[in-house]
Amino acid sequence: NPEFCESLGSLACEFLDKYCSFCFVSFSFSVELSLLRFLSAELTRGYFLEHNEAKYTERRERVYTCMRIPRELEKLMVFGIFLCLDAFLYVLTLLPLRVCLALCRLLALPCYGLRDRRLLQPAQVCDILKGVILVLCYFMMHYVDYSMMYHLIRGQSVIKLYIIYNMLEVADRLFSSFGQDILDALYWTATEPKERKRAHIGVIPHFFMAVLYVFLHAILIMVQATTLNVAFNSHNKSLLTIMMSNNVRSVFQGNIKERFTNYVLLLIVCLRNMEQFSWNPDHLWVLFPDVCMVIASEIAVDIVKHAFITKFNDITADVYSEYRASLAFDLVSSRQKNAYTDYSDSVARRMGFIPLPLAVLLIRVVTSSVKVQGILSYACVILFYFGLVSLKVLNSIVLLGKACQYVKEARMEEKLFNRPPASTPSHPASKSQSKRRASPGLSTEENLTASVSSQPARPKEDIIPLLVTSSSDQFLTTPDGDEKDITQDNSELKHRSSKKDLLEIDRFTICGNRID
Image 1 (cartoon, rainbow, N blue to C red):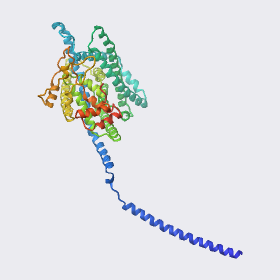
Image 2 (image 1 turned 30 degrees about the horizontal axis):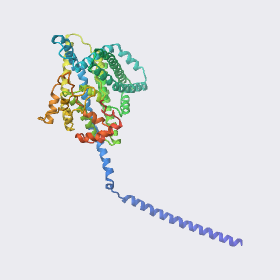
Image 3 (image 1 turned 90 degrees about the vertical axis):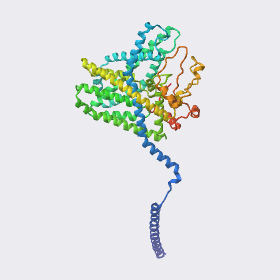
């Protein structure tokens, strides 16, 4: 029936309309109740941090470590920079005097005869070699035209300037890494015991190789200083960009040597600019803001990157005091009677700082920038030299006192009197020497003071002097299997695991170069 179907359809539509309206109201009412409950739960929800105490304690210690990084890092940097300054002043002040004494001994040999088999002591031979290399490279640097190099670099674009500076930084690290090996090979070839006179001929190629290395390294540093000078005098002030990009890039490289080298480069730049402006003091105040900007940016970038290194690798801030104690141990051990190397060489091996090329360049720049004419000028030069000698002596005294303090704080003074278990196979040590120890009647502090203050004695030819091995080398480069034995035998520094982690990151970080 059509009418029945029509009425049935209208009823169905009305039912569906009322049902949908009821469902919509019910759904709206339920959503409103759930939203209120959710908001109420969010506003009144609680949690307890003590349920995960270890996690939050570790995070807080990381924050405290980052806050301690600037102080500990700068204490290490200051101590290391003064060590580099001491080694650098040694080349400029005491090395000429030691060379003169060695030459006087060599000239006075016919007067008192050859009572010793050696004409000169090994240290005197090394001093003469250093002096001759310094003089030869200084005269060779006169053939390098600084002005032509400056205008050649100045004609490059900013991006090329940036690339050149970064390439020079990488090349400087490569030269420093290989250069100390060349110098050590020369020193040992010149001083090792020889049975035949023909064996001395081998010193000649090593000597020319060392002269070539120092000359090339000095030229490299000159190009680096020239690039920095161009950045200073550029109108767009690309200096800060170059310096900061270089610092950020060298995260896993040593910073003490680079910072001291940059200070010397800034000094060279200031000398060259002051010469161009006829030593007008007003121009110095124009350079002063840029110099401060470079130093401040370098310090800030070093702090930030070291903070991230320690944070991401779970390294405590105490590792910087451990590195400082290692540097202090090298300084104190080199002052003993039976020291096996000069402290300047220890600094060079530990931090990669070789003062000879930098000294050659600085002497070349100073002599070309400052004209000495007349008796008064020569008197000023002599007074300036004595001032440098006084500064060197004062710096050495303060550094030695601080080094003794750091060694005692780290409880490493007992290692100064430990003898190596065995010498080299070709020259075995005698039993009487292996049994020698520190004087039993003296305390540890008295032994430390006596060993540091005493002068080295002349070794006899028939007795091989025992060398005090630097335990800090083992302390920094001991394999995993030997670390436990060293820790059990000697009371070493705390947090050894942190230092191991730091060296696993990169063995050239901060100042962790190996001493082979």
